[in-house]
Length: 53
Image (cartoon, rainbow, N blue to C red; front, side, top):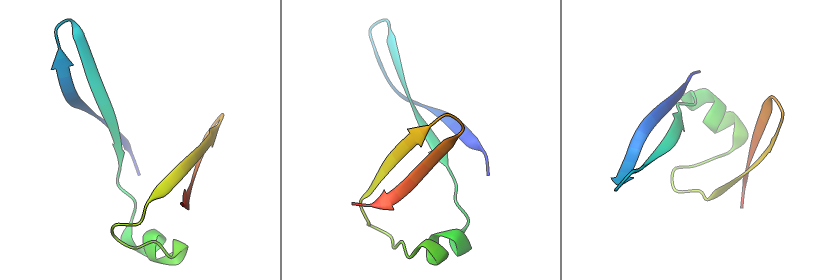
């Protein structure tokens, strides 16, 4: 997997970005996630955890 930085919008002098990570379908299924699920993220150094809201 790889983190991708994408331009989200520009307002005047400010530029806003979003970050995208493509997760393999098998990992999504293993986690029990489905399209449209709302997720929340917890982070600490070197780790991001996703869970259903």
